[in-house]
Image 1 (cartoon, rainbow, N blue to C red):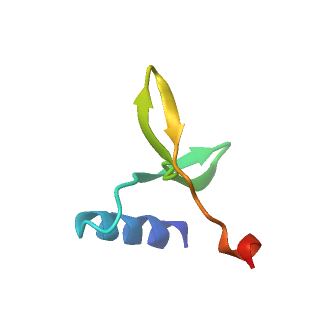
Image 2: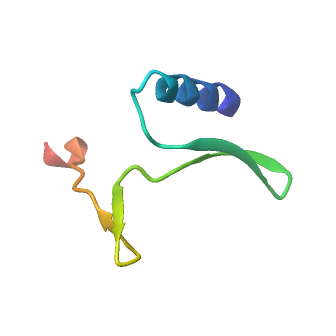
Length: 60
């Protein structure tokens, strides 16, 4: 299933729908989907900036 998720993310990126990177990596012999954080901005003075993100489950 994680391979399908990674493949879908690559398709979305190729279509310009996303900008984050994904890849499959093994940890102690178990494959895992690794996703680049999407809630961080460009680095300023070497420190990544946070992007505001609203969790609509909590907003209700």
